[in-house]
Image 1 (cartoon, helix red, strand yellow):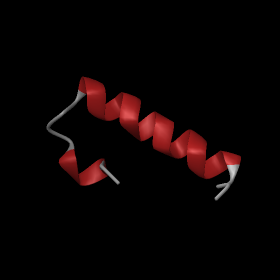
Image 2 (cartoon, one colour):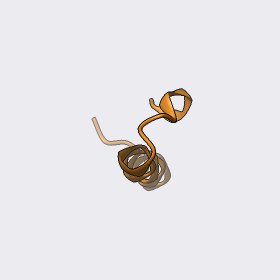
Image 3 (cartoon, helix red, strand yellow):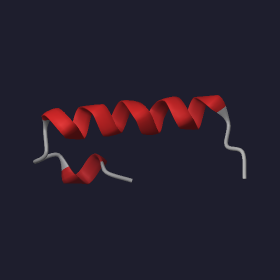
Length: 29
């Protein structure tokens, strides 16, 4: 199932952010 590019970008951004700040579990999807 294709998801909008915006959602994909947000998920990638959150993933990169969580890689640096693993204590930010509240931002994880």
